[in-house]
Picture 1 (spheres, helix red, strand yellow):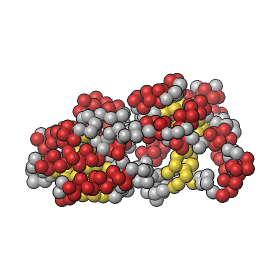
Picture 2 (picture 1 turned 135 degrees about the vertical axis):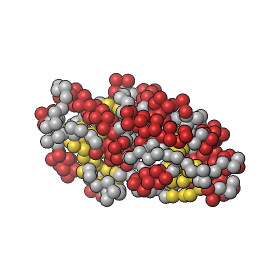
Picture 3 (picture 1 turned 90 degrees about the vertical axis):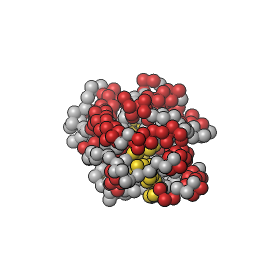
Length: 396
Protein backbone atom coordinates (compact mmCIF):
# COMPACT_ATOMS: atom_id res chain seq x y z
CA UNK A 1 0.00 0.00 0.00
CA UNK A 2 1.34 3.45 -0.90
CA UNK A 3 1.85 5.85 2.01
CA UNK A 4 -0.81 8.52 2.41
CA UNK A 5 0.22 12.12 1.75
CA UNK A 6 -2.31 14.30 3.54
CA UNK A 7 -3.13 17.45 1.54
CA UNK A 8 -4.71 20.51 3.18
CA UNK A 9 -6.35 23.36 1.28
CA UNK A 10 -9.32 25.66 1.64
CA UNK A 11 -11.26 24.89 -1.57
CA UNK A 12 -11.07 21.71 -3.60
CA UNK A 13 -11.45 22.04 -6.53
CA UNK A 14 -12.00 25.79 -7.00
CA UNK A 15 -12.46 27.13 -10.52
CA UNK A 16 -8.98 28.65 -10.52
CA UNK A 17 -7.34 25.67 -8.78
CA UNK A 18 -7.63 22.76 -11.20
CA UNK A 19 -3.82 22.73 -11.28
CA UNK A 20 -3.83 21.18 -7.80
CA UNK A 21 -6.10 18.36 -8.94
CA UNK A 22 -3.88 17.50 -11.90
CA UNK A 23 -0.75 17.71 -9.78
CA UNK A 24 -2.02 15.32 -7.13
CA UNK A 25 -3.47 12.91 -9.68
CA UNK A 26 -0.01 12.52 -11.19
CA UNK A 27 1.79 12.09 -7.85
CA UNK A 28 3.75 8.82 -7.88
CA UNK A 29 4.53 6.54 -4.90
CA UNK A 30 1.99 8.27 -2.62
CA UNK A 31 -1.76 8.25 -2.13
CA UNK A 32 -3.12 11.80 -1.77
CA UNK A 33 -5.91 12.38 0.74
CA UNK A 34 -7.31 15.90 0.49
CA UNK A 35 -8.78 17.62 3.54
CA UNK A 36 -10.55 20.82 2.46
CA UNK A 37 -12.72 23.44 4.10
CA UNK A 38 -15.01 23.34 1.05
CA UNK A 39 -15.50 20.70 -1.64
CA UNK A 40 -16.44 22.18 -5.03
CA UNK A 41 -17.01 20.93 -8.58
CA UNK A 42 -16.48 17.31 -7.56
CA UNK A 43 -18.54 16.07 -10.49
CA UNK A 44 -15.93 17.64 -12.77
CA UNK A 45 -12.94 16.49 -10.70
CA UNK A 46 -14.03 13.17 -9.12
CA UNK A 47 -10.93 10.99 -8.97
CA UNK A 48 -9.11 11.95 -5.78
CA UNK A 49 -10.10 11.01 -2.24
CA UNK A 50 -11.27 14.25 -0.57
CA UNK A 51 -12.94 15.01 2.76
CA UNK A 52 -14.68 18.17 3.86
CA UNK A 53 -13.36 19.39 7.20
CA UNK A 54 -15.60 22.03 8.75
CA UNK A 55 -13.42 23.33 11.56
CA UNK A 56 -16.08 25.89 12.52
CA UNK A 57 -18.83 23.38 13.31
CA UNK A 58 -20.34 23.80 16.78
CA UNK A 59 -18.80 20.64 18.36
CA UNK A 60 -15.31 21.58 17.13
CA UNK A 61 -15.63 25.17 18.34
CA UNK A 62 -16.82 23.98 21.77
CA UNK A 63 -13.88 21.56 21.93
CA UNK A 64 -11.35 24.28 21.07
CA UNK A 65 -12.87 26.67 23.58
CA UNK A 66 -12.67 24.08 26.35
CA UNK A 67 -9.32 22.45 25.58
CA UNK A 68 -7.46 24.81 23.26
CA UNK A 69 -5.91 24.08 19.85
CA UNK A 70 -6.12 20.30 19.95
CA UNK A 71 -7.62 18.18 17.21
CA UNK A 72 -11.25 17.16 17.72
CA UNK A 73 -11.09 13.46 18.81
CA UNK A 74 -13.38 12.06 16.05
CA UNK A 75 -11.26 13.87 13.44
CA UNK A 76 -8.06 12.54 14.95
CA UNK A 77 -9.43 9.00 15.08
CA UNK A 78 -10.61 9.15 11.47
CA UNK A 79 -7.26 10.43 10.23
CA UNK A 80 -5.18 8.01 12.27
CA UNK A 81 -7.08 5.16 10.65
CA UNK A 82 -5.61 6.33 7.34
CA UNK A 83 -2.12 6.49 8.88
CA UNK A 84 -0.83 9.53 6.91
CA UNK A 85 2.93 9.72 6.40
CA UNK A 86 3.15 13.50 6.08
CA UNK A 87 1.07 16.67 5.87
CA UNK A 88 1.28 19.10 2.94
CA UNK A 89 -0.50 22.42 3.56
CA UNK A 90 -1.22 24.46 0.43
CA UNK A 91 -1.14 28.28 0.91
CA UNK A 92 0.40 30.02 3.89
CA UNK A 93 -2.95 31.22 5.19
CA UNK A 94 -4.18 27.61 5.32
CA UNK A 95 -0.99 26.49 7.05
CA UNK A 96 -1.52 28.96 9.90
CA UNK A 97 -4.49 26.85 10.99
CA UNK A 98 -2.78 23.46 10.61
CA UNK A 99 -0.42 23.45 13.59
CA UNK A 100 -2.77 21.37 15.76
CA UNK A 101 -3.30 18.92 12.91
CA UNK A 102 0.43 18.40 12.39
CA UNK A 103 1.18 18.07 16.10
CA UNK A 104 -1.71 15.69 16.77
CA UNK A 105 -0.63 13.38 13.96
CA UNK A 106 3.10 13.76 14.78
CA UNK A 107 4.12 13.72 11.12
CA UNK A 108 6.49 15.86 9.03
CA UNK A 109 5.04 19.01 7.51
CA UNK A 110 5.51 20.53 4.05
CA UNK A 111 4.03 23.97 3.27
CA UNK A 112 3.49 25.37 -0.23
CA UNK A 113 3.28 29.11 -0.93
CA UNK A 114 1.58 30.54 -4.00
CA UNK A 115 1.51 34.35 -4.19
CA UNK A 116 -0.42 36.68 -1.88
CA UNK A 117 0.65 34.57 1.11
CA UNK A 118 4.25 35.62 0.37
CA UNK A 119 3.95 39.09 -1.13
CA UNK A 120 0.89 40.70 0.46
CA UNK A 121 -0.09 39.07 3.76
CA UNK A 122 3.29 39.51 5.52
CA UNK A 123 2.51 43.23 5.83
CA UNK A 124 -0.68 42.45 7.80
CA UNK A 125 -0.55 42.77 11.62
CA UNK A 126 0.61 39.57 13.28
CA UNK A 127 1.37 37.77 10.03
CA UNK A 128 5.15 37.76 10.41
CA UNK A 129 4.93 35.90 13.71
CA UNK A 130 2.65 33.35 12.04
CA UNK A 131 5.21 32.90 9.29
CA UNK A 132 7.99 32.46 11.83
CA UNK A 133 6.03 29.65 13.43
CA UNK A 134 5.49 27.95 10.07
CA UNK A 135 9.17 28.31 9.18
CA UNK A 136 10.13 26.83 12.54
CA UNK A 137 7.86 23.78 12.36
CA UNK A 138 7.82 22.91 8.64
CA UNK A 139 10.34 20.43 7.28
CA UNK A 140 10.24 22.02 3.82
CA UNK A 141 8.77 25.24 2.43
CA UNK A 142 7.93 25.18 -1.28
CA UNK A 143 7.87 28.36 -3.42
CA UNK A 144 6.79 28.22 -7.07
CA UNK A 145 9.95 29.82 -8.41
CA UNK A 146 13.29 31.41 -7.50
CA UNK A 147 11.87 34.91 -6.97
CA UNK A 148 9.36 33.59 -4.46
CA UNK A 149 12.08 31.52 -2.83
CA UNK A 150 14.17 34.64 -2.41
CA UNK A 151 11.22 36.41 -0.83
CA UNK A 152 10.68 33.57 1.66
CA UNK A 153 14.31 33.76 2.72
CA UNK A 154 13.95 37.53 3.13
CA UNK A 155 10.99 36.84 5.42
CA UNK A 156 13.17 34.63 7.61
CA UNK A 157 12.73 31.09 6.30
CA UNK A 158 15.94 29.09 6.82
CA UNK A 159 17.52 28.68 3.36
CA UNK A 160 17.95 24.92 3.78
CA UNK A 161 14.18 24.52 4.09
CA UNK A 162 13.34 26.37 0.85
CA UNK A 163 12.91 24.09 -2.18
CA UNK A 164 11.58 25.56 -5.43
CA UNK A 165 8.80 23.34 -6.73
CA UNK A 166 7.29 24.02 -10.14
CA UNK A 167 3.68 23.22 -10.89
CA UNK A 168 3.28 21.07 -13.97
CA UNK A 169 0.67 20.86 -16.69
CA UNK A 170 -0.83 17.71 -18.24
CA UNK A 171 0.67 18.27 -21.68
CA UNK A 172 -0.62 14.97 -23.05
CA UNK A 173 -4.20 15.94 -22.22
CA UNK A 174 -3.88 19.32 -23.96
CA UNK A 175 -3.63 18.59 -27.65
CA UNK A 176 -1.63 20.93 -29.85
CA UNK A 177 -3.70 23.22 -32.09
CA UNK A 178 -1.97 25.21 -34.81
CA UNK A 179 -2.73 28.93 -34.42
CA UNK A 180 -3.25 30.86 -37.65
CA UNK A 181 -5.39 33.89 -38.46
CA UNK A 182 -7.41 34.30 -41.62
CA UNK A 183 -7.18 37.70 -43.27
CA UNK A 184 -10.90 38.31 -42.74
CA UNK A 185 -10.89 37.66 -38.98
CA UNK A 186 -9.60 39.64 -36.03
CA UNK A 187 -6.71 38.54 -33.86
CA UNK A 188 -8.49 36.85 -30.96
CA UNK A 189 -7.01 37.47 -27.54
CA UNK A 190 -7.82 35.50 -24.40
CA UNK A 191 -7.62 36.63 -20.80
CA UNK A 192 -8.78 34.39 -17.95
CA UNK A 193 -8.54 35.22 -14.27
CA UNK A 194 -10.07 36.93 -11.28
CA UNK A 195 -10.85 40.65 -11.48
CA UNK A 196 -8.06 41.65 -9.11
CA UNK A 197 -5.48 44.43 -9.22
CA UNK A 198 -2.47 42.14 -9.66
CA UNK A 199 -4.01 40.67 -12.83
CA UNK A 200 -3.42 43.96 -14.67
CA UNK A 201 -6.69 43.86 -16.64
CA UNK A 202 -6.98 47.67 -17.00
CA UNK A 203 -3.64 47.67 -18.83
CA UNK A 204 -4.95 45.04 -21.22
CA UNK A 205 -8.09 47.09 -21.90
CA UNK A 206 -5.96 50.18 -22.58
CA UNK A 207 -3.73 48.16 -24.93
CA UNK A 208 -6.87 46.94 -26.69
CA UNK A 209 -8.04 50.56 -27.02
CA UNK A 210 -4.69 51.60 -28.54
CA UNK A 211 -4.82 48.79 -31.08
CA UNK A 212 -8.47 49.33 -31.96
CA UNK A 213 -7.91 53.08 -32.39
CA UNK A 214 -5.07 52.27 -34.79
CA UNK A 215 -7.32 50.08 -36.93
CA UNK A 216 -5.84 46.75 -35.85
CA UNK A 217 -8.46 43.96 -36.24
CA UNK A 218 -8.74 42.54 -32.76
CA UNK A 219 -11.14 40.86 -30.33
CA UNK A 220 -10.84 39.96 -26.64
CA UNK A 221 -12.48 37.04 -24.85
CA UNK A 222 -12.48 38.19 -21.23
CA UNK A 223 -13.04 35.28 -18.84
CA UNK A 224 -13.41 35.95 -15.12
CA UNK A 225 -15.36 37.37 -12.25
CA UNK A 226 -14.75 39.44 -9.15
CA UNK A 227 -14.22 37.30 -6.07
CA UNK A 228 -14.86 38.32 -2.47
CA UNK A 229 -11.45 39.82 -1.76
CA UNK A 230 -11.57 43.56 -0.95
CA UNK A 231 -10.94 45.56 -4.10
CA UNK A 232 -12.04 42.93 -6.60
CA UNK A 233 -15.42 44.55 -7.28
CA UNK A 234 -13.75 47.93 -7.78
CA UNK A 235 -11.36 46.44 -10.34
CA UNK A 236 -14.29 44.87 -12.19
CA UNK A 237 -16.21 48.16 -12.24
CA UNK A 238 -13.12 50.04 -13.41
CA UNK A 239 -12.55 47.58 -16.26
CA UNK A 240 -16.18 47.71 -17.39
CA UNK A 241 -16.15 51.52 -17.24
CA UNK A 242 -13.08 51.64 -19.50
CA UNK A 243 -14.64 49.24 -21.98
CA UNK A 244 -17.72 51.46 -22.18
CA UNK A 245 -15.78 54.76 -22.22
CA UNK A 246 -13.63 53.67 -25.15
CA UNK A 247 -16.49 52.01 -27.07
CA UNK A 248 -14.98 48.53 -26.97
CA UNK A 249 -18.20 46.62 -26.27
CA UNK A 250 -18.32 45.16 -29.78
CA UNK A 251 -14.79 43.73 -29.57
CA UNK A 252 -14.93 42.36 -26.01
CA UNK A 253 -16.89 39.22 -25.18
CA UNK A 254 -17.30 38.62 -21.45
CA UNK A 255 -17.50 35.13 -19.96
CA UNK A 256 -17.97 33.98 -16.35
CA UNK A 257 -15.53 31.49 -14.88
CA UNK A 258 -15.80 28.43 -17.13
CA UNK A 259 -15.43 24.70 -16.47
CA UNK A 260 -11.90 23.76 -17.41
CA UNK A 261 -12.82 21.85 -20.58
CA UNK A 262 -14.88 24.83 -21.78
CA UNK A 263 -11.99 27.20 -21.06
CA UNK A 264 -9.59 25.02 -23.05
CA UNK A 265 -12.11 24.83 -25.92
CA UNK A 266 -12.37 28.61 -25.94
CA UNK A 267 -8.58 28.88 -25.84
CA UNK A 268 -8.30 26.69 -28.89
CA UNK A 269 -10.47 29.19 -30.79
CA UNK A 270 -8.26 32.10 -29.74
CA UNK A 271 -4.86 33.09 -31.08
CA UNK A 272 -2.94 34.72 -28.18
CA UNK A 273 -3.16 34.52 -24.39
CA UNK A 274 -2.46 37.82 -22.60
CA UNK A 275 -1.52 37.90 -18.91
CA UNK A 276 -0.56 41.49 -18.00
CA UNK A 277 0.20 40.85 -14.31
CA UNK A 278 1.39 43.70 -12.08
CA UNK A 279 2.51 44.23 -8.50
CA UNK A 280 -0.51 45.62 -6.64
CA UNK A 281 -0.36 48.63 -4.36
CA UNK A 282 -0.69 46.25 -1.41
CA UNK A 283 2.35 44.27 -2.59
CA UNK A 284 0.16 41.41 -3.84
CA UNK A 285 1.82 39.53 -6.70
CA UNK A 286 1.39 36.37 -8.70
CA UNK A 287 3.25 33.17 -8.11
CA UNK A 288 3.27 31.65 -11.56
CA UNK A 289 0.13 32.19 -13.67
CA UNK A 290 -0.95 28.65 -14.30
CA UNK A 291 -3.05 29.32 -17.37
CA UNK A 292 0.15 30.40 -19.10
CA UNK A 293 1.43 26.83 -18.89
CA UNK A 294 -1.91 25.33 -19.91
CA UNK A 295 -2.27 27.47 -23.02
CA UNK A 296 1.41 27.12 -23.92
CA UNK A 297 0.78 23.37 -24.01
CA UNK A 298 -1.96 23.83 -26.62
CA UNK A 299 0.42 25.73 -28.88
CA UNK A 300 -0.91 29.21 -28.04
CA UNK A 301 1.53 32.14 -28.04
CA UNK A 302 1.55 34.10 -24.78
CA UNK A 303 2.08 37.82 -24.19
CA UNK A 304 2.91 38.51 -20.55
CA UNK A 305 4.73 40.87 -18.22
CA UNK A 306 8.10 40.58 -16.53
CA UNK A 307 6.52 39.92 -13.16
CA UNK A 308 7.30 37.69 -10.15
CA UNK A 309 8.18 34.17 -11.39
CA UNK A 310 6.63 34.50 -14.86
CA UNK A 311 10.20 34.73 -16.30
CA UNK A 312 10.88 31.37 -14.63
CA UNK A 313 7.84 29.89 -16.41
CA UNK A 314 8.93 31.34 -19.77
CA UNK A 315 12.45 29.93 -19.43
CA UNK A 316 14.51 30.64 -22.58
CA UNK A 317 11.71 32.86 -23.95
CA UNK A 318 11.75 35.25 -20.98
CA UNK A 319 13.26 38.01 -23.15
CA UNK A 320 9.84 38.31 -24.84
CA UNK A 321 8.21 39.62 -21.67
CA UNK A 322 7.20 43.29 -21.41
CA UNK A 323 7.38 45.60 -18.41
CA UNK A 324 4.58 45.96 -15.90
CA UNK A 325 1.98 48.74 -16.29
CA UNK A 326 3.03 49.54 -19.85
CA UNK A 327 -0.06 49.29 -22.11
CA UNK A 328 1.88 50.61 -25.12
CA UNK A 329 4.49 47.84 -24.82
CA UNK A 330 1.70 45.31 -24.32
CA UNK A 331 -0.02 46.58 -27.47
CA UNK A 332 3.24 46.33 -29.39
CA UNK A 333 3.81 42.72 -28.36
CA UNK A 334 0.24 41.85 -29.39
CA UNK A 335 0.43 43.74 -32.67
CA UNK A 336 3.42 41.67 -33.76
CA UNK A 337 1.07 38.75 -34.34
CA UNK A 338 -0.91 40.86 -36.82
CA UNK A 339 2.14 42.31 -38.56
CA UNK A 340 3.92 38.92 -38.69
CA UNK A 341 1.17 36.32 -39.20
CA UNK A 342 3.59 33.38 -39.36
CA UNK A 343 4.73 34.18 -35.81
CA UNK A 344 1.47 32.73 -34.46
CA UNK A 345 2.38 29.24 -35.62
CA UNK A 346 6.12 29.58 -35.07
CA UNK A 347 5.82 30.87 -31.51
CA UNK A 348 3.05 28.42 -30.72
CA UNK A 349 5.37 25.53 -31.62
CA UNK A 350 8.13 26.99 -29.44
CA UNK A 351 5.80 27.33 -26.47
CA UNK A 352 4.43 23.81 -26.96
CA UNK A 353 7.96 22.40 -27.06
CA UNK A 354 8.87 24.31 -23.91
CA UNK A 355 5.81 22.91 -22.13
CA UNK A 356 6.71 19.37 -23.18
CA UNK A 357 10.32 19.58 -22.02
CA UNK A 358 10.12 21.82 -18.94
CA UNK A 359 6.54 22.05 -17.65
CA UNK A 360 5.15 18.52 -17.85
CA UNK A 361 3.00 17.42 -14.92
CA UNK A 362 4.77 14.07 -14.59
CA UNK A 363 8.15 15.70 -14.10
CA UNK A 364 6.69 18.10 -11.54
CA UNK A 365 4.81 15.39 -9.66
CA UNK A 366 7.90 13.17 -9.57
CA UNK A 367 9.82 16.10 -8.09
CA UNK A 368 7.17 16.51 -5.40
CA UNK A 369 7.37 12.81 -4.56
CA UNK A 370 11.15 13.18 -4.31
CA UNK A 371 10.66 16.00 -1.80
CA UNK A 372 8.34 13.79 0.23
CA UNK A 373 10.87 10.95 0.05
CA UNK A 374 13.65 13.23 1.26
CA UNK A 375 11.56 14.60 4.13
CA UNK A 376 10.51 11.14 5.27
CA UNK A 377 14.02 9.81 4.78
CA UNK A 378 15.25 12.39 7.26
CA UNK A 379 12.48 11.51 9.68
CA UNK A 380 12.86 7.73 9.51
CA UNK A 381 16.50 7.20 8.62
CA UNK A 382 15.62 5.63 5.26
CA UNK A 383 16.82 7.14 2.01
CA UNK A 384 13.77 6.52 -0.16
CA UNK A 385 10.26 5.20 0.19
CA UNK A 386 9.32 2.07 -1.68
CA UNK A 387 5.93 1.78 -3.37
CA UNK A 388 4.71 -0.42 -0.54
CA UNK A 389 6.18 2.13 1.81
CA UNK A 390 4.77 0.85 5.08
CA UNK A 391 8.17 0.60 6.71
CA UNK A 392 8.89 4.25 5.89
CA UNK A 393 5.69 5.71 7.29
CA UNK A 394 5.66 7.43 10.63
CA UNK A 395 3.30 5.96 13.16
CA UNK A 396 1.03 8.46 14.82
